[in-house]
Image (cartoon, rainbow, N blue to C red; front, side, top):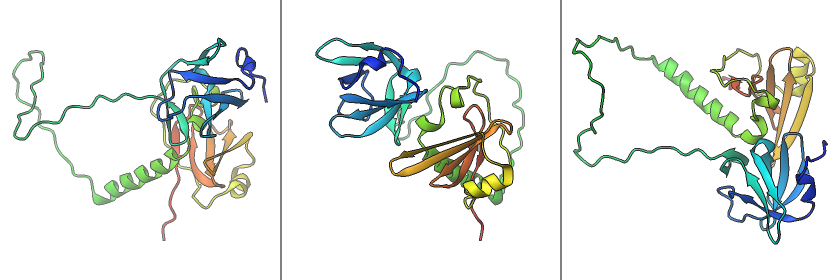
Length: 237
C-alpha cells in the first residue's frame, strides 16, 4: 500500500471532522484507518461504519486543537454505500389547478409556417427493450460509484463523451473462470467488499474495457473513462 502523503500521515489515531460535513451522515467525527493510491478509508467514531473517500475531494488539514478539521473541496453526500459530490437539482414549482402555462420570454422571430414533423410510434418490442435496458442499468448502479468511477476511470482524464455501446458475449452466468477461458486473464484484477457484497473488476487495456463482477458473476463493462459500454443480459427462458 502506498504511503499517505502529508499531512494525512500526521492524523495517526487523532479524531477529526470533515468540513463541510458529508450529507446523510449524522455524526461528523472520524478516525483514519488506511489508504490506497486514490482514496482513504475512515471509520465513524459513533456508528463504527467505514467509508472510502476519494483523494481528489480532500483539501487541507487543520491540525489545531481541540478539533482537527479535514477540508473537502466539494460538498459530498453518502448515498448507496459511496461518497459522491452533492447534486443540487432545480425543481419547478407545481402549477395550481386550471392554471395556464407560465409564459416564457423569447426573442422575436419572423412568423413562418411551422414545419410538419412526422410522429412515429415506437413498437412495443422497442419499448420493452428500453425497459430491460433501464433495469440492467439500475443493477449496475448498485455498485458503489465511489469504487468504479474516479477522476476518469482508474486515473484517466479523458473528456466525458457519449459512450459507445459494444456487444460482449457475456451473461449473468459468466464468472472469472469462463471469462478467462474466453479472452484470457486480465492485466489487472481488483476486488473489494462493500456492505456484504463483493465487487471485482477485471481490466483488459489491450481490449479497451474493464469487466465488472458482482458476487462472482458478470454485471457489465466500462470503458477506460468509466462509462458503461455494456449491460448484463438476462437469460431468456
